[in-house]
Image 1: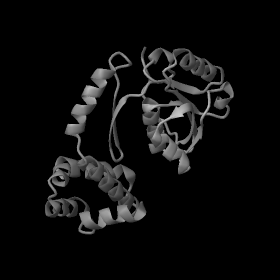
Image 2: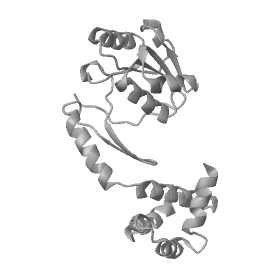
Image 3: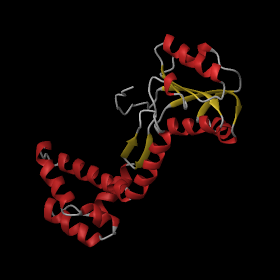
Image 4: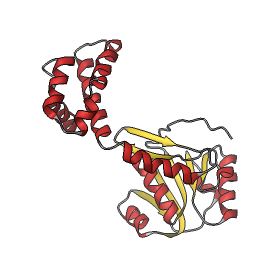
Length: 224
């Protein structure tokens, strides 16, 4: 199987998770982190899912799955330990053109979920096309050590620089050499090592004296 790699916008989309054990709970958290409108159908649920339902973060039905649970659903994840039920969810989803993923069963998936490393807006995904999830997890652990939180800070800073340049009527095509100069001259390493004076000197040299770490990051915080 050759999968087409995409990043899917599910913010505000209705997503269903069938099964709320430990695996289902992880899937629910992943959907919520991306802004999905999550419904859970499961006879048994974890305390974490119960707390999410109590706080109004998910809609939870403590009962058996029904085919009409898929009405109006954009994406469904099956996370039960019942093979027959998982297959039924997959078939029902196919009948309704609903995207479906059955945990740990690539043959019953319209898409598979890669191992993911997140550092703010940086998302690094590793997939073995379902051949070896263990290898994907191993590679994810290695990348977690390689790509630290400095990457999240770096992207936040670059985003603020880009907005400030655009607000000053800079042509977008003129930005590339500026950003390349910041990267090539070690801005990422300066952030990792917290060399704020060096960062300010580099920002001023490449972009102008009105650009400095403290004010740019303050703007980022204030706008969040």
